[in-house]
Length: 399
Length: 144
Ligand SMILES: [Zn+2]
Image (cartoon, rainbow over all chains, first blue to last red; front, side):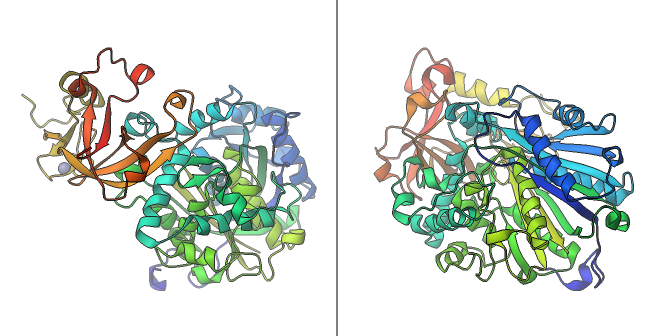
């Protein structure tokens, strides 16, 4: 961590960048009855229930994270959502960054509030994936890797994360059993999340014997193909109390980029952009990793949660698997990670995921997370990434 | 004659990489004359110092596996090859991804030596890119 005197923000006092006055999330899973825009509507209507005095015309801008137009043959998701939510003619924009699209939309909303351009902004994320076959989804996700050599050589997304896993295992002694602990924990947490995609406990032997996708990753190391949407309504902290008695606040954020090709990196098992984004957020908020009460991180594949432990500073580099092995990231452990069930079991509607994480942070900080509630929450961290950790964001929220 | 200019060096494009692969059966990159940075595929300007004074770099014959995976589920374009092995290999500081062909995955290790093969060199005719014969370059375990 950087020394305190280097901090650009904070100055010993928490700086509130923006307030989250409401958040909502659709049920995640296979949702054949609803299109993407209707999933956003479902999430938005829940968010409105969190607020009072908020009229739709107050919303000055709309940002919509969406990964791929392949699934619904639909770009212009900004206009689509603004229209379907009755928010015309406020400005809208689709945000793209593969699986980081949702958090990037959220970040843009924070920036609008910070700049004073708007007092109330809506951030959305959505993906309607289940209309497509696994091969089609594999292809759509592959487009987030480097096209000249990686896509050309058949590196699917699971294969790219498998390359991270093989390297981590060879150098640090992590095992397939360690990765299985991530899946088991996140499935357990999702049992207490009524909106989760997968509500089924799994055993270590089930994980280890599940169908191979890309060695060493098996079916239960991979997040599912989900439909879903999530939203957050952000406001200027000065007026947040006008809309709700219980806002949460963004107190730090970070955003970094890495090479698009995994092969170009000095260390394929080190998510440098995640590390950088987290450090930026910690510095801005003036908090240390040890002060984080719980985190939602990007477990698109189990190995990536292990890498995130290291990059978030919860454990030293090369020792992430030990945190999983010791059970320290379960609810009630030293640093609970993915109480929602994570991408793995809450589900991974790609463009929505970053905002599903914000939804979980908001609920947990308000003490409204039910059976999966983490005790004594103060600072919460959300880490979202896109591509093979090629773009990463971190957001720290507080009450 | 390519001189230092403020425009991209057109001899070091992605297209030049595929031209060399198809016509000569070699993988080429770019070496920056000013700072020594190596890029493969080549780039029309040095990523580090932005010089366009570049020279052609040829990949060394053998490299070392940095990481690998055997892919069992893939997209439609690659489903015909499953299971297939993919790897990232290091060739004297230049890293590239590729398939490892004609190998038993049990013999593939991090640190194993591989050599690059290309269609032109192996004289596979009718190469029509990915859609027919898969990637036009790949790795094989050295000494196999
Ligand atoms: Zn240079």
